[in-house]
Image 1 (tube, rainbow, N blue to C red):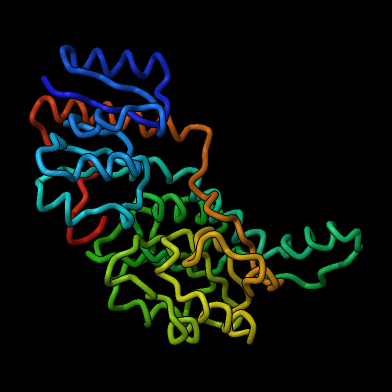
Image 2: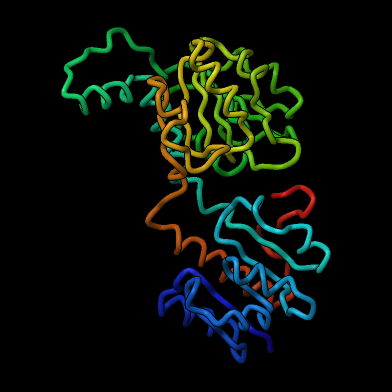
Length: 316
């Protein structure tokens, strides 16, 4: 039997579930800094990842065969090293649809109804009326990355009678969307969209996908929402289009440069909502990731296909 290392503070009940599924395996539970680095070199399975694991598990003779990540994004992991060693990688995709879709709708509503400006005025004890405001009802939204999160966004947006366009690599239809197009049609749908919602992972193809040219294709009354990876958006291009009124506003959860320094121009704009990497935060995060890991552990021990297998070359 091999060794399993589980990070991120499994509860006693969750630890017992791992023991039940993997009798006879050597198990180590703890948080970063609490585990002897030598344990990583001996581990066949790791749930989580950190600098100690990166240092020990990629050395010659390490036992690693499978990593279950704690996040959906894997662009910061050594995927090519994993691929060359035949290490399986599964991500936490599927644990985020509820919190991230709620954040997207909160940004859309906040920007549309001017809540961001009212909150700023409140902080300064200023009684400022916003005047006429747009509505979300009946508008068109494009979701770039129509996966599980995108589908949940579409489902919620339908309560506002919105017309939903999905953009995905396959172009296959998806629940909640009135129309789905392939990625090469992105420039065609930007001019007709009142909201553009980016939920893309970071790959060689998506880096700086949203640049000056694409922002200039959007309506001056439209809003851009980013809960995808930060580097899919060219930050200076977004700042430029927001400053010039090329679009009406933006809701941003992740950024190319993190954390944003105090003097960054994004802090100074009054037509944006910033929620620094909070979109996926939820009280249910740990239980959902652990449930995914436990299901995958059962599959791994039974020799079955794992859920959420990451493609080394695709990067997701």
